Length: 449
Ligand SMILES: [Zn+2]
Ligand SMILES: [Zn+2]
Image (tube, rainbow, N blue to C red; front, side, top):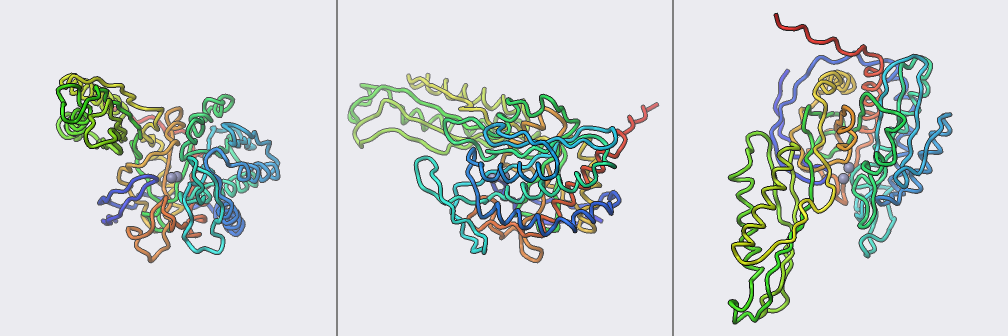
């Protein structure tokens, strides 16, 4: 069956309307052990998620959540490693039979958002962010991800004897980005050796998403979420009286030309028939008074791409435009392009996605798995998926019967995860994990004769 559905995407960090085609591929057989485990765990996963929701912690501050996770893993008889990338927790489960190595990742951090859901377990937590006191809320659903992976760990421990292979559980802090001046997230997890002693054959992750209903799973092969890069440009002129522009070099006029000329990078220079590109200036700061031409102007912005070569190409072109427009005005540029390590493209391994999609379909039952459009938001899961084949899929957060296009998106103070998503996410992750561990590696395609 093929059907068309229009869904509005409000990604981790971006929104764009898109037409998608949903289709029903062959489903794997729903595993009875998954159904049994999910039924047994469901109430506790809901309790864990509500508890974590009520006690959210900002990026790199996930002490309570990490302790809860570590205690749970210890209670299962695992030996968690703690304190990775500040508050990361990992544990390895060895199955009773030989088989592949699989990593499963959940993120644990919350956002500086003041919750306005009115839920009985809503957060009233406050903390300091960028010098300001703010509410803290699990507005991206990482509470659900953590609770689901705690449930998956318990279910798999219960199947240990029959289990083929080994599983690394990765509970990661600071997905939303470490506070200014701090390091953190997936990049730091990798630097601190999350894969050093355990190189997985694949890694799976999921995200709850407002743009799908809580009975829907979405996935996409290849580039899935954008690379997100921040840039900074300082246009350096020479200060002068506003009445005597010839006495200096005007960085305001130069900055205006750079903003205009940079528009042609996407519209005239990049081959956007390959993949879309976004280049946005988000702030311009310069000057203090109506009759002073200032010394310098600062520009900052973001670049979103879906291909590593195109990403590097935009950096080069923006640098080129900025330097040459500045030179034409007698000004010069100090450029940070990119300004820091951004997230690369979240890339779903094509073969792995094709192989696991029937497992996701088995979990979703007769609700077709949605082909996700490209998502302009970014995910630091991308860093793991750059090391080993990755699969990142989406589970709907919006209650069935409500229009997901109108639902408060991830990062909204009204964002809510329908608890049905916890059950679907748990079953999908379990089914995919067991199918991956059990399956023989795919046979090589017969050579064309
Ligand atoms: Zn987010
Ligand atoms: Zn998120």
